[in-house]
Length: 555
Image 1: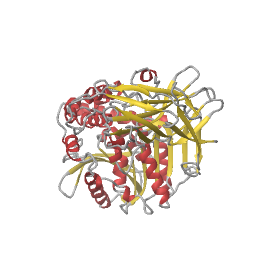
Image 2: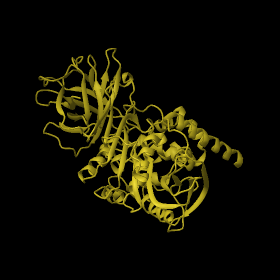
Image 3: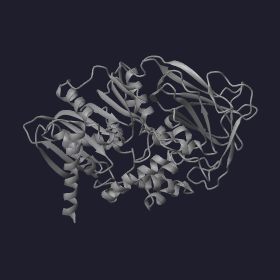
Image 4: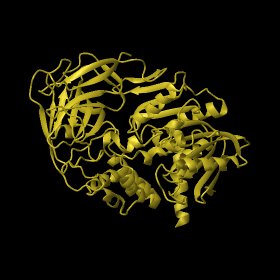
């Protein structure tokens, strides 16, 4: 059986190598590769981490690429071969407590110490020549930031990731439930039966199980519903991580972003749930005098090449920074794809200069106007946590159903509001963060606000572009009439609304299970079991000018 599984793994790696080369037009292999699997790299506390080496079978020296991941080494064997076939030593290491590595997996907590110890091990290897690049998407990007100040790190290519995760775990004061239930299943599934896990990924099984587990009360028990057993880090988070600054302090690596940060290429997608954090990291580096490269496409967390480590961009960047060959590097540091047929554009910086701010006001008949509303009654709906408003597409962690999705099923629900412009006379391009100021009142003092922008084509098909979310509590400031003025940033985007299209704003009080549903009580989120519906009012009159503000550019 072991030999059979190894043969399957070898076949998958060979297939992935060929598929990468064909899909991304990587050109011919430059050398053969010698692979060494199962190397045990000892950490200072004696824990050993499973590590694979891919080395060019040609005279050196060769620069080294390091990839540290919690998803199992075999899943990255194909891309490791791609890089090794083109002149790089590649080191692929399973993080502590994952796959065949020792210790207990505690997400984010050990990546700096283990990463630095791995670099110390690299320095002792006879084939290591001092040129080290870090690469990888998602969690692999975080493992890069954790050791980005090590003197040996010459450069990095970070995809769909961030140096800080607290704001990702707790967006807008809620809990990123869909992300962590899906990720929990991914980690545990790859640890057990990778082939079965792959089938579940491709068939939507992860998302179905996340939706089922997300209805668990109390929520701390959702780990058992999702993977059939208690997971220590899940329960530790509910016990220690909720709004706890000290818990996250040692795992926040934004302090490493500065004038000494090595050259870095940041890649993301407008439908990635970490795009705002990645853009924040970009802005931090720019403010420190660095010139990072930035590439953002109209893709999700696991599409657009991020799932395959963006080999074209990675090879070009690593050749430039580690081999001195800059022939594959574009002239301008910023390239973004503008959806809605806006195409690719290159700029010197992001955002590309100050935008023209345009305001669209919510009006009572479901319109979205350039003029403020007249006196009128609020729009109303009831939010029931027993039947929470679902999420549909968008910037989510999902193997199926992420990104731009037809919004009709969501817009037809009685617990959402829809406001639309008339057909546009001219095309309209937005780049950056749409902002919203919404005046809201709740019957219970509790209530979430979810705002989504969609593009409605002449046939009436509504497709989501960007959105934002925030949780309010009885402590949220209100006026004497209980009205809250809520300012909200929607996640960054770049999109062109074509002539004759309409711009639409959807307002709801949930996007489940993407964000943990608001149960309407003050019970701790991991222990809560009671559910209280809330009657929601959205005010849009001459005193309460609920509106969105668009960052408009003429290109």
